[in-house]
Amino acid sequence: MNAETAKEVIAYMEKYNKHFEALSAFVSEKRAKVIADELTWLLDSLTAEQKFIMEGNDLEAKRLALFEKLGIAGKKARELIDECPEELRPKLTLECRAMEQYVQHIKETNADIIDIIERKLSVQEKLINRTHSTASTYTGRGVKVTKHNTSGGFFGEV
Image (cartoon, rainbow, N blue to C red):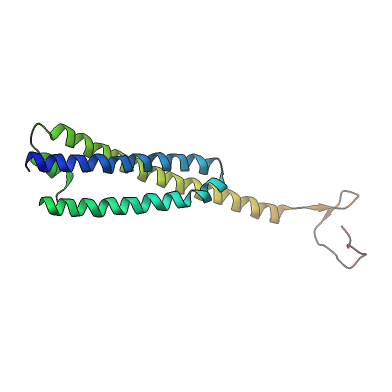
C-alpha cells in the first residue's frame, strides 16, 4: 500500500470512527434510560436509532466501494496495518483500534441492555403472578375468603 492509499484509508477511518463514537454514546445513554425505566425517551429514540443504523450501513457500503477502488478489497485491519507505510502506520493502528473499541463497547452495552430488559420483565412477570395467586380477601371479621360468592346481595359477600 502506498502513502496516498494509506492517507485515504486513514481519512475514511476517522470519519467512520466519528459515527461509532456517536453510536457508542447513544447506546450508553440508552442503557441509562432502560435502567431508569424512561419508556417515553426509549420510544422517542427509535427514530434516532434507525438513523444510526442507516448511517452505519451507508458508511460500510462506502467503505467497501472505497477499498475496492483502492485495490484493497477484502483486506482485514491487521493486513492494512502491516502493509501501511511506516510513517503512517501509528495513525492507522490508532484508528483501527479505536474502531475495535467502539464496536466492542456497543456490542457489550447492547447485550447488557437486553439482559437488563429481560431481568425487568422477569421481575414484572413474577410480581403479576404473585399478585394474582396470593391476593387475599378478608371478611369484616378477619376471616380469609377463599371463594368469592356473587349470589348474596348487590356486590356479593366479600
